[in-house]
Image (cartoon, rainbow, N blue to C red; front, side, top):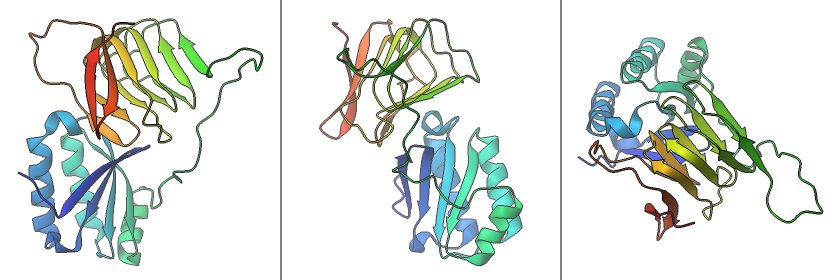
Length: 226
């Protein structure tokens, strides 16, 4: 069910959950948030989450309890944003960040020969296994698979000459024209700029080359015809 009191949007570092003033008391808010996550487990699984609670004061044990609830659902709470000194103190005591990385901050840019036309990029000639992360301001090409638990964050497009099962974020600096291509497109989570989607849970699906792109305000997958 939809819950307008809890807003969710993608940021470069993961997901930002904003608790609006009409979300009720803390216990009620946590219950509503848990229900929201349970309804969309595939979407949230493995996510890194920042929580914006505004001016709401949240004490240590309340924040610690929420952190544990999210952890049981394979979600990492890494930051809490608030104007309340009580909340900020509790967050710091739990080792959480209290600010987000500036959205204008750019990722590292690989070198490119200026005499050659094209865009900078990184070529990886092997499969990315679980726990591996690639971050670049340019494009990424992987000659191999991207396994569940692996992550790619690129300022440009991402091309996988293999199976995509991990998490990818193309256009990480806001480029909505970036694309994601794979011979078998079934990511844990796929993001382009600020848009997010997950693969349908259809194990009978026949693998086929596809391209994911932003079309009319949402991510769509189309046949990859080269």
